[in-house]
Length: 379
Length: 252
Image (cartoon, rainbow over all chains, first blue to last red; front, top):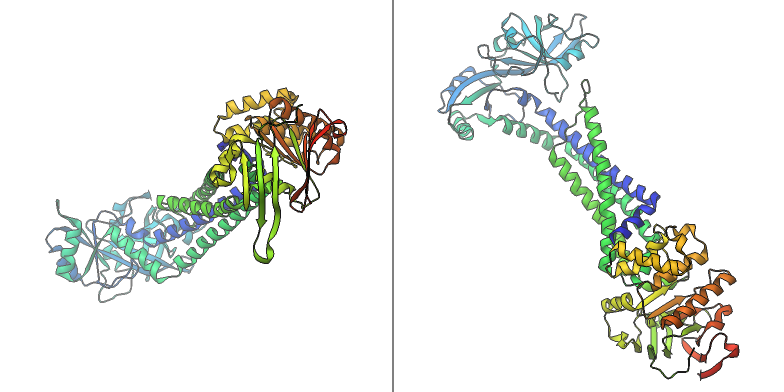
């Protein structure tokens, strides 16, 4: 009976396309909005991923996310170095400062000060120049998107100069960095140089980056640091989640996106269910005739389920394809849109579409279950 | 045709009643119907609208279960069967011809005619091949790949009849088979149904308002208000006007 079921479905092209488009629309909305949400969450922790080379981030115990800097004292760095299992530990400065351009305009800038000796945390993806040029006086490396924000009509180049805290800085390199949540330019420099680009403060150490000795367990060393220093020690991955969870908990972002996703689910279900039900009602005499001829309820239910599966499969394919296409556009160079579709979003959307499919077909199934075969004798 | 007959009826119903609804909304569609239907005969159920013809047809075909009374068809007491068993009974023994044909619009003539075999579990290829062979016998050989929308009313009804016969049922039930057809086509269809009854030794039951086709009946039950008010059985080769009326039941 499967081929009869599929021919019945595809024979009514208007309804067939209507159901597919309903499901495709729901899929697109659910997958795209969830992926934008994931992209935004990823942006909040992008700077943690960009700082590579260290297993452990050590910070004040009250730090809630990566931009929530609570300065440490210089002595904390040495305390961390003294914890068993720590191979090395270096300072990291992270803060906001104001850049002053040649035309007198100001722009908030994220400033990262790397350990002078090792340059741990230097940008891994250089477009122009070298990270070792940071050793030059007043040298900074800027991310390309930040450069284009500050000088929109210029090709990125080294040698460009600007001021931070009345101190001149020279761009010696251009790098690619993760998009930041605040969309500010990201400037890398040496730790000692960074302190000259910000107003003087009593405590300036933002984080301690540390690595473990060979054979040590990172988690264990983290716990040991916390126990011995009273500070908070997290792996990079843990710090990313702490940051993302903060934004999920403390902002309305998940709720707003959740509303859109729920609307997508509801509207998609409504469109698909209504069209599918109308399709079934239109064919109710045919189903009645099949019942009269000896087709059992299970046979008819499997026919409807097959129809629902087919339209869901095609609708899901179209919707997820459209969402992926949006993702390609969103992640194109120069775009500031956030989009990240992990496999969890793909699977979650597929499950949501399966639920839409089941909900949509349930009405139709019920209608076919209760229809009396005698309906075919009603003129 | 040898209608007189004393042979055992293919279907026999006794004191069949069917009540819809309950309380004040009770509707008595059938009130103690007795009827015998014989193989090789064309039985017509006639009467005014709402007299219970279609309900009786549904009961005889195993679609509806009567509220009371007995229906014995092909040696099976239909009233004792479960819904699932009645479905199986219809699948194996009954062919249906509907007033509006009820062909699946997306299926070709051959595919439509093949549906009962597919329901019985045959593969599409075998079922369609059998359907094509039957349609060719019925003069529809050149139309087997046409969709119902491309067929005339008479051709659609032929496809519907082929669908009703393809699985070799013992009983053919037809609901107003000529009402959607012009007189000439209706006449042709009735000749076809009659030959199916006679040559195939099947029982054909027809519900109709169409007095133009009464002449084809071997056995005519007139109904009113849920009862059979008269039943006439002819030893006939054609029209009641030149037949021997063998049985007349008159009910008060």
